[in-house]
Image 1 (cartoon, rainbow, N blue to C red):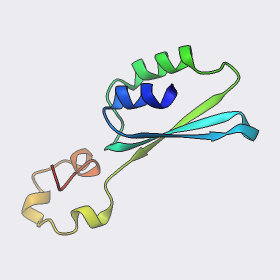
Image 2 (cartoon, rainbow, N blue to C red):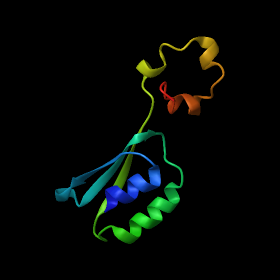
Image 3 (tube, rainbow, N blue to C red):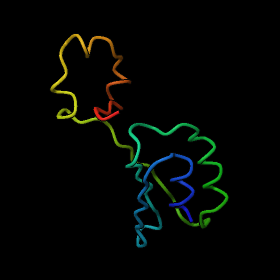
Image 4 (spheres, rainbow, N blue to C red):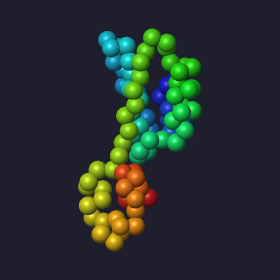
Length: 91
């Protein structure tokens, strides 16, 4: 249920990793780079559907050096740092 809700909010693939002995879980956004939009709305919804005794955390995916090392300085110079953090060479 949490995985489907997170995927719907983020618009991409999500993995939910459970840590039963620690009474927590982690939501890992792997289908989109950066922090998904409307995280406040997702957190509000998550608080409604998760078991009350469980804590949670989020893990986000960002661009790695290999994805941007082929860009020229002229190409990089047209982007902000925030755009480079979520850069997708296939898009």
